[in-house]
Length: 273
Ligand code: ADP
Image 1 (cartoon, helix red, strand yellow):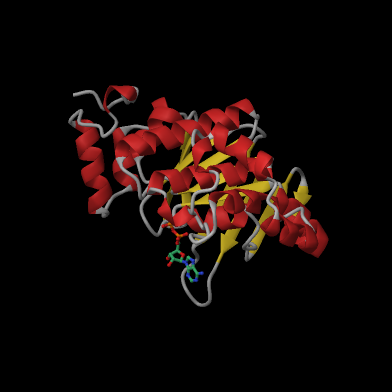
Image 2: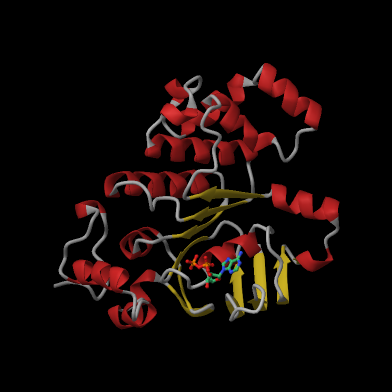
């Protein structure tokens, strides 16, 4: 699906946000990205969803160099990629049905989009809401939903878009632990059922190691490791988060056996008391 070779991204005169990043992701793979804040994970996701271009290096999608895509080619490629953000990117004063149908905007003409606002294709949105477990919210105003329900709406919008790959950038950072687990599991199961590639940028090491078969650690713009969860040692995590006290506290809690997700989370390798 993706092949990155020696990718570098520089903003202005700053130090590179990403440097020397080489990575391949196969179709249907599920990958969690972890690392301290400022490591470059969001920048990497913005390269992968084609809203940014590499400063140097090569990014291929299904063998096509994105640098060679023209406007129409870029739009077509972007349509195959669905992004879920921490802040949902929903329009609060619109009804849920309209926010879900916005998943179609990439392929609709302007007139179809306007017609949809007047007379929404509610059945399509209802099906997507059914999949995320809140069918009763179809006609609710979006800003009257809880944070977790809004994140479900954002997932429903991506399901309607029906992309080949879902990029979820910190999708659960602003919800409580039990909801975080529910949403990550939902994303994983829905992606699995529809054979979508799923890349998730996660603040929680515990969720990443417990629920994803491949873990990519990012630090200071570089890939620090790319391993199966049972190969990710406490030492590697300590080095990944060195100097970041919030994350180190999180690791200490896991080490002491006090995970946030209770028994629902698999025991983590190397972390038993
Ligand atoms: P993470 O998602 O791991 O927290 P980011 O990708 O957001 O990290 O940031 C990596 C680095 O790139 C940071 O130093 C950040 O300040 C910088 N950066 C990200 N986006 C921009 C931008 N649009 N303009 C300038 N600097 C940016």
